[in-house]
Amino acid sequence: MQIHPFSAIDYQCDSAPESIAIIDDNNAYTFATLRRNAWQAVNGFKALGLSSEDRISLVCKNRYEVLVLLTAALLGGPVIVPINRRLSQSELIWIIGDAKSQCLIMDVETAATLGDINLSQHFILKDKGNTKDLAKHEHCFSDWLEQQSSVPAAISFAADRGYLQVYTSGTSGFPKGVVLTQGNCVSQLVAVTLTLDVSILAGESMYQALPLFHVGGIFVSLMCLSRGATLQLRSEFNPETTRQLLSSGQVEHAALVPAMIQACTTLESASDTHYPKLKSIFYGASPISESALRAAYRHFGCNFVQIYGMTETHSVISILGARDHRAIFSSEDSPLIGSAGRPIIGTAIKLTDIDGNTVTKGGAGEICVQSDLVMKEYWNNPSGTQEAIQNDFLLTGDVGRIGDSGHLFVVDRLKDIIVSGGENISSLEIESVLMQHPAIADVAVIGSPDEKWGEIVVAVIVANSAVDTSEIGDFSRKYLSGFKLPKKILFTDTIPRNAGGKILKKQLRKMYAEPSLG
Image (cartoon, rainbow, N blue to C red; front, side, top):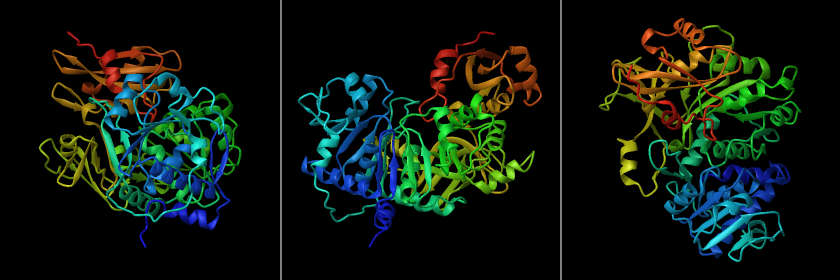
């Protein structure tokens, strides 16, 4: 008998079927209900003529049904294509078409704005029995689901069979559909569980509001359920309600991005808050400044675990564990500050130069990953797949270095490295320095074309109190070499980020990187 991606959830269903698996904004659902609904989805889609190779597009906020569809895909149902509901109508239609979706499942808000699409099946996520305003070709998903057989079928685990297709953000052209397999999923569940130095126990609870159209939110949710813990799933992040939940004594673990952490710790109501049961916070998706991390530790007083990963590796590549964080918090100048941790079990990393040669120890190069976690392919994009996976290594597009202890340090994205006067400058390094200034709430650093230098450093800043460019310049000189100093400092009300918390630097460059003739 094989271990497959649903094995751990199956075990929890057999061990404690009436334990609560998921609490979303509307209801609580047991493990027994989750398994029954997953099999109903598998059998229902099969009755509609959809195979395990067909695609189902899903556009909605976080809700219980998303996990039903994902677990159904793990059991042999159609491949799920979760799409960012914040995309424009044309972008949504493009992805649905590119995926060759046979079925579209969407929430009421999306149905109202997306318009009619020529697909064989449309389902709307509404309350059971509520068929008001449904078009003739649309069906209420919950009503349809309850009509399907829940009899389990034999599970045929195929490591290379796709179950999930997540589209990249399209920061360098059209989005690419990353095909992730059952093998990717089970390998990551095992590897992360063995690597973590904190425990998520059956009967505990994890808060999670990361969007389920991103692989990070998907993996955290599947990991939580596989451990028998209750997933406190929220449709959207709200700092005040999150603070209240984490301090209520109902939650032992939380998954947050750095922007969420800072939003919680800087609330006026947060100053005297205590977190009696909170054991660990998992964070990732974007860098966090040292000052923000130390402030979060003082505020929450729990373990911290950082995850570095990407869509093409089913999320996790490396982990900076709780023990590493304790070493950072106990020292003013720990060598682990800024580290992304060590590769998880079963994952190998090498750094290469522009010609593909492995860089010498201590040098910086592109992070390349070899692991069972690496995607199967980019959907219908063989040239993109061949460019991304070379000699059995995935080229991540991130630049990193490896410290003496074997810990990985991510320097920057290749495309975000600024080349000024022949020098390579890391935008992340400058952002980290500027975030230490007490008047700076958020910052993004980009390169702007310049006739003399090739590029100049531009800092786009969100200030939380009065500060001028000369003060920021004086502060920067204390920590940065002259060629790294921002040549242009601009102020804005907000830094554009995607739903996963990553800065949209392509958008910033369009807004602010005008050619300089200085």
